[in-house]
Length: 287
Image (tube, rainbow, N blue to C red):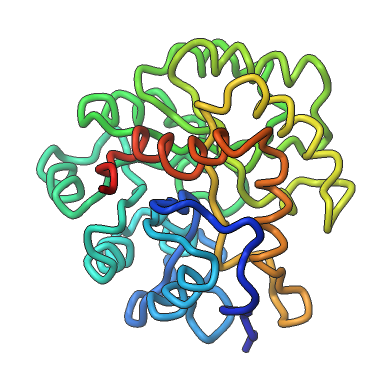
């Protein structure tokens, strides 16, 4: 059992109307973990009702639900979550080069707009499938969410530059050994190439300095924010699956205020929280 903080004081400053959380996972009852994954999060399941409380607390209006590693290639839980959340939600699924056209159409009709590559322990599909998944995603007009050890980015840059789909580099790039000038320059080149977005989410997963400030991640996050605020999206990384106890569970308010504080100004916040995710994930502009 774990106690997740689901409500508290309001964010300062408040999130703008139309804010999209582009990085979170959700788990509904009746969908067991699949072999090869890390297992389900600690009970109680972080389900739709729990996340709605987080949305009300933080001021989130829309959400992108990413297929969790626990379910590997089985997207049934994701589809159930999308049905539960309705039009405010979009999904990022796990597919392969062999996924049938009929299945892709079914996923698309349910609100899936992207495919996930997760090249770290527990991931369902790694970089070996990158080009095959890119081909299918491109055919569907989907984006891709790509995650790997960021310190491989210089070696991977030619492959990433050749992708046909729009794609987002997850979790600040996950530079486990830190990001220097060479890595930051590679990020800028990929962004400037026209297809890469950069996601602010889960700084604690790769920061060597640690919280509450995550000062090492802040250095390159601020540099990317100054370089291309029109290419950044943001997410809560709820329900923080790395936390295995109540004592280790982070405060979403503090995480949000810290990471969004790395953006240069109010105009950048509007882009990152509203306009950019509308473009990347296909949400309609709110009136």
